[in-house]
Length: 197
Ligand code: GRF
Image 1: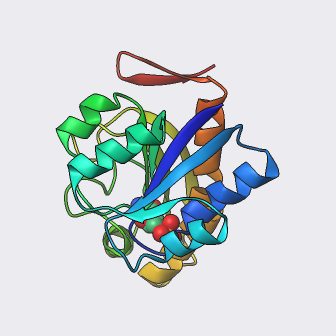
Image 2 (image 1 turned 180 degrees about the horizontal axis):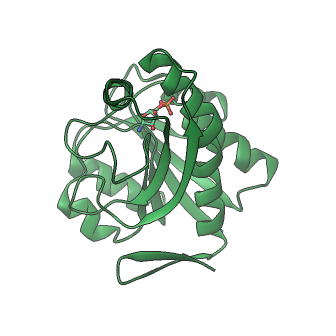
Image 3 (image 1 turned 120 degrees about the vertical axis):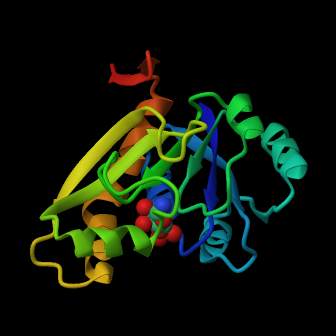
């Protein structure tokens, strides 16, 4: 059974979706560690409530040490706002997944995170947005795409409404599904493209 770490910086609703999927047996994997760069991140509380090791770690050497100690096979970024270094990426090549709240390659890259993504989406007036799970590479939001889900946002009048709809209708579904597939050995990367077996 693969062991994975989840990195959070905020409320952790995506983390909660992963915790629930593991507890229901949908994900055949184990959350070995939850890490945040912010001590106050509610995601840490969610992990503790589920009996999962939860640590605020800001130093990269300590982070790498803890990942090794916990025998972590892969990492999931679920609303993690600190930079992932090339060093960490090289230690976990195509083994770090990220959930981004838009349909990459739209509305992504430097500066596009959290509510800012949805503010740009609203301003542009697009009718459909969504979420993407992708592997992390040296290019921000540029790694191989694993899963995507589109969401109709025509009725949404604020960035917050868009954010909520995409969280509930896309993110909380495709992130656990991507982890489930990965734990079952169904995710293969060839020439920077992901094939679901
Ligand atoms: C989500 O919108 C995710 O797409 C983005 O950060 C937010 C995290 O939300 N990367 P939560 O902390 O999982 O509720």
